[in-house]
Length: 355
Image 1 (cartoon, rainbow, N blue to C red):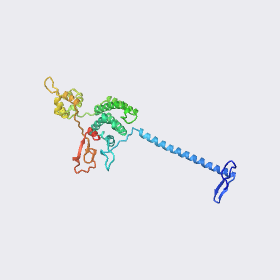
Image 2: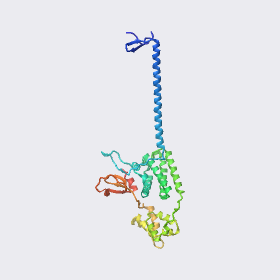
Image 3: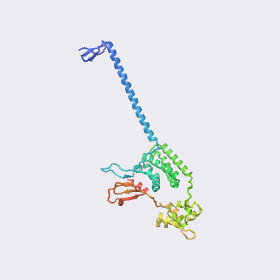
Image 4: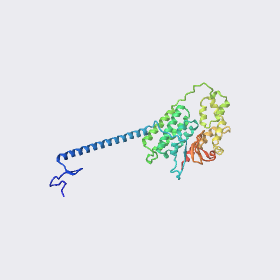
């Protein structure tokens, strides 16, 4: 058997397989074959290098696009679902459960703040979430919360209405964030600490803008509140459900200030918001033997929660377990859908997702 390998005795022989069989190769042919193989190896390495460079370029481009979308907070995405299915446990048809953050993300709260009937409802819900439920929200829900809050502040600055409740909301949120940021080691908030510090700075800036707001006097010369008879002015005041609105109205001019001191106004407010038992426990009698209804009202407000009143609220169908806005339809399968619908208060909305 011939020795074809290369060892200490001889360099051996080179054989090449051809169509006619195996043949010996000369020195020149060996060098030519080696040059061809080296050229092929260099070309293959060049192509591989270009392929890796193109792949890295595509990955870098996609990453830049993703970072741009994530950092572009000026154009946030808001969900516009008119109703959602609230499920609290896994079934054969559905797996998992609906959380408060998911419901807050999917329901159309962005359009709700543009509706004057739903504005106070959404503001109260934001305030309750700021007090106790903010750590339970997911990172996306917390970001959506801040985006909606920014929309609310912008609307108040443009319309110059509902300034006081938004100030109270921002103050509540700022106090809650101050206590939560101090406990960052306990992972109570999602995201970097610098992000929340920046958000707190935005809250302070919004508070300053609301403090410096200047209410523009209307330019129209039509009939004003002062042009109406006293009986109509009192009738309008009886429709106010917040005593602080009466105080603000009384500061407009001395004539309205005298009307807002009417004892019957404050008596109706006390009887509307509080029970007879609560009122009897907080009686305040003047030197003349009369009940001080105005002082009693603010004392009762400090001791008991007052009744909440909203023009439009979320509705919950007990038959379908669907949460929806009042003026929107949902796919109900009950024979009488109206009998299965109940109104959901802001606190009831939060309690709906407590397991």
